[in-house]
Image (cartoon, rainbow, N blue to C red):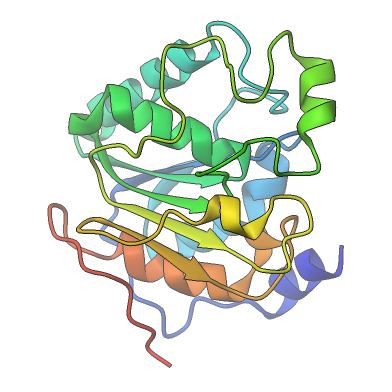
Amino acid sequence: MPELCRFVIKSRTHGLPKGDGHPVLVFPGFLAGDTLTWPLRRRLTALGYWNVGWRFGTNLGLKPGLLAQMVHYVKSVHAGQKRKVSLVGWSLGGLYAREIAKRIPDRVRLIVTLGTPAARDLHANNAWRLYERLNDHSVDAPPIETNLMELPPVPVTSILTPFDGIVAPGSADIGSGPTWETLNVRGTHIGLAWNADVLRILADRLAQPDGSWAPYRSRT
C-alpha cells in the first residue's frame, strides 16, 4: 500500500487549521475497520479533535439493526462530549454518515465523505457483487426505510477522485448547493483515507465554526 506508506511517513499537520476539540467519528469503507482509519484519526488528534473509530469491527455492509446502533453511538458521543459530532465516512462509511445525519441532524455538525456513492446507480462500482454475496439485500435496497440519494439537512462535502478504480467518480458527485459541495483530489479509492490532499480539505472543513459553512477554497 504505497499511499499508506507515503501518508504515514510524509503527511504532516503543520500549517493546517487547528481544531476546536469537537468530536469527530470516522466510519470505514466496505471490508475495512478502525485499523485502516487509524492513520487519519491520528492526524485528527494532532489537529486538536476528539476522535474515535466506529467500533463495530469490519464493515461488512448494512446489517439489520446496524444503523440503529450507529445512531445510538453518535447520540452517546454527543451526550458525553456535549457538542455536535462531525462525521467522516470513507466509501460505504459515507453512506452510513449521511443516513445517521438524516435521523439526528440536531446532533451532527457536518459530514465529509470520501469516495462515497451519492447519485445515479449504486451498481456503478466494482464492489457491489461482493457486497450482495455478503448480505441478504441488494446495494440499492438496504434494510432501512430511506432514500439513499437524499442528502441530510447538514453541511456535506463529498471528496472524489477521477482515478478511483472502485466507485465510478460520477456517482460520487453530489454537485454544489447552499450547504453541500463536491471536491476532486488525485489518488485511488483505497488511498482516500491516506491522502494528504484529503487531510488538507478535511482540516479546513472541520475548522469551520459550528453553524457556519462556506464552500472550500484552496489555500494553495
